[in-house]
Length: 256
Ligand code: NDP
Ligand code: 8X3
Image (cartoon, rainbow, N blue to C red):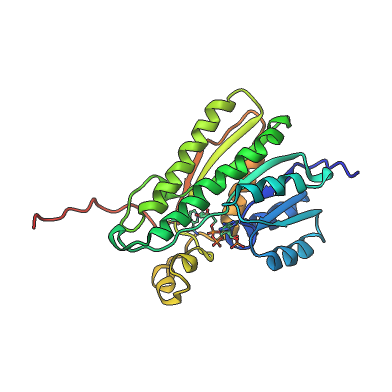
């Protein structure tokens, strides 16, 4: 059985955006990879590409389904089992209209994916992570965890869960080798906003055109940097925006 010298990295949502770029980044540095997502054909293609650089195990799964997650963890081959870097990245936003017009099913999907899915994977992996001398859990939260904006309702709240869950895990694992980070990006270009706007390219362009937004490779570099910190350092949270994004005034509305 191959025993790897580099830490084994597990990435959820590796079929696009941040997860895909992060898989490529770790592969360039020869870290063995476990990549997941629902779109199997993309996982297969990515695995074939990255196998030129490192060993890859891919597995198609829906993080919302705790039974699928448990089966997946059981199915990890022995030589990939000792995962020490978990990138909890799978997630999505659906809709950006006011809460009054939002669909309940979209709200459920965001909670099921961003909250339940992340919890499913984390809980399943914890026994393995705790066995490692040093382990990292890097959770993708968002600036929406920290700042309110119209149309963020359940998405922002689901990411606030991720940020607070990360801090709470830190408390539980203080003094152990398990490190936990809440990574909180702002405006970034990926399939994220196409998913959010249900494929509406015009809405996507209205937001991103001319903004010089964060790119998936920027986030991959940051994730790699977090994972590479010396064992006694824990990056608790890291909020990152493109220079073209900043806060605005509080909204003041007149009485009707
Ligand atoms: P993408 O839409 O490009 O990627 C999302 C990934 O999540 C895909 O690989 C998708 O794979 C996976 N995914 C979604 N639902 C599920 C599911 N039920 N089960 C398994 N995998 C799933 O978006 P980003 O790369 O931009 O987003 C990655 C993370 O970063 C998300 O958590 C997002 O909320 C967060 N984020 C994004 C920001 C942005 O502006 N882009 C900013 C801040 C945070 P598949 O469809 O194949 O299952
Ligand atoms: C995504 C960033 O600003 O669209 O998490 O909420 S934002």
